[in-house]
Length: 485
Image (tube, rainbow, N blue to C red; front, side, top):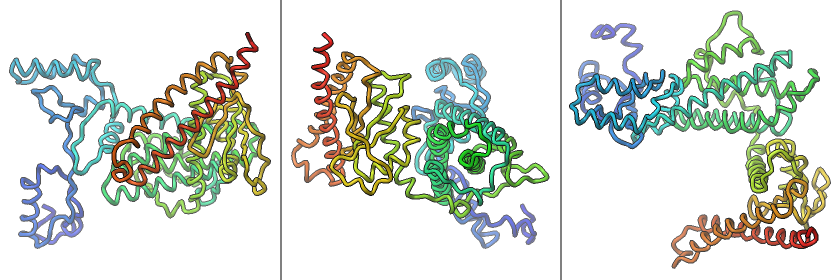
């Protein structure tokens, strides 16, 4: 092998290796014998590290067995298969009649409509998403199907990006010359920088599930759910010589391009197809077509000018405001209207929300965001704070320091609003009683850690504050209802 016992170039190049990846059930049958034989014949260990991958079980945690009918053929997941064909495979086997009946019934229960076509990349990404070391994998086709939906999302994102590049008419600026200006641009750039760091750490520790989780979260929840929605109004502007539009297009291109390179080891086929479609718009075109698999893997040093920790620190507050605003809309059954929103908060929080007000209005589906700072010095603010909100607005609480008032007077009638508030009050009372019951257990302060007690206290305070606000709203609605009668 490799020319041994002669000291050939191949032997010098490929022996010893760095790492061996295998299953834990082969330690004595294969790994130990390789170590002993390699050391005896060459005087060197054949590898320095051994990475044990997990054993793949079915979704119930059982070992895959033909007699149980729970064996999942990878080719069936990749190409899809009907229930009839799955059962034909069992019938073609050598199981006895009783085991065959059990296997057929298990297949009918687990795959009543067969296995949908998921593709190779979705299967590979799903397997890498499980924790590889120390735990067995409970393989679920629904998890692979979810990864297929993620692949579809990637297609849609690249299609949108190509349309934006075509509409702009000019190639995006190179990465080193792209400097985001708006806070939402700076936030997505910094999120990509943090994602690259997470990938580096995950690969170094052989924790592939942390890499796939970071990439999935960035593409789906940061790039698609937030950034694309925020820049759509900017990209729809007709003026081509628009600096804001050009910067947003360049940031979008580089985020997609770098993300494809990050995902390439897990999804080589899909990322290659999408990468080739992006190449005509590359700021650094090459005479010959280049494959994504030969591109250098992104590093944090390449994105040092895209690191904006302040934006990443501030944005969770923005996301919480958007979440509560959407919740208030759902509570009031508002679908098409875009009501105004008041945020009663501190001056520092108001400054943060004001800088992201455009994103909050788009993501929260509101018309205007008004910021009110009661009993605080607002001279340091870069804008004029708003007056107090209306008394009959619907109120939500992001935490014990921020109140959101959604102006629903023009969106719903008073009777309907009273019913909604009463239902909300009952739910909050039930939640509050649950938290209070935890604090009444004997020796609560001694048994429960300080940070847990602090979190519980904050939740109780927020619930009590929201309940007080609901009571005020119900009292304010009573005279209006009487007048209408």
